[in-house]
Image (cartoon, rainbow, N blue to C red):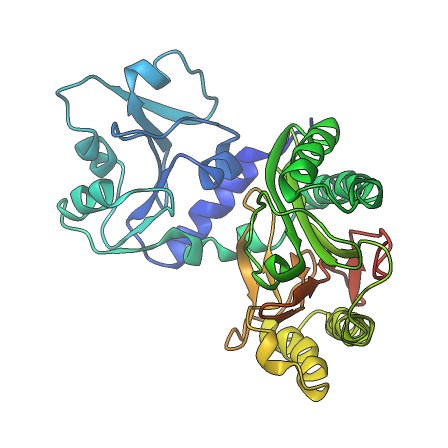
Length: 358
């Protein structure tokens, strides 16, 4: 497994906290804590949190049942017993000002932190630079994840036969994903009209000859970094003559978005590049989700490739490009790759066939 420099990440986080003039960050269990420390702790009603002040020692606050045996170089451990106040332990390590709270903290924890007398802001906004711009080692993990899911997609055509159900195919896909990843993240198999729902999962519906099938799958590597790739297939020759025309539009929209990626371009402009092609072809109302989302230790994270997001792209950002066309009651189609921003433009991490698959 890749070794990450967590000490450097925490030092940079403290610099960002100081620059934002915050009292500190309180990060709950989950991907944000894992990014900063490498720790994987379970979340429950007892508070476990990483406290990152603008200066001084970083503190891990947690119940003795969970953190009592931990040895953390460079991190102060504040283990508490039932009956003690963990929020006071957080407060001791904080300075003056607002607290940046992590996305994994639930409302009961946030409200008790606010009772210490601090306003709260989102920690991910303070740490956006850290989370969005991937280190070279992170990009290596995302490349490995993309290659893994590409290998799974290469097996999909052999699974799609008339009479098999979406659930049959999903079970097969779960095993194929596990052969290439540590965990299954999600499986979407949307056949015929089910494909017109972008977040359809899978059902007992049987595939029929000539139908369109959307297969969107993802897994998690041992490192925690994720894959996410969508391809559109048909069961034999498409029965609807509009399918091939629409897929040509979709492929051009995807290519236009990829071609628009380069440092300095706003995230919203990538969305616009894909959307303009689909709208010009008369399918604008049938593309009703964002063009993409960031990916890393979370399956969906910033930057979001969506209208209204003027965040400038930076070298090292990684996100999906996934335009879609969805005709209610008929079929849907989506084409998704993970890409990363390079000095000169864009590197697609998924490199499997992008043609309409049979």
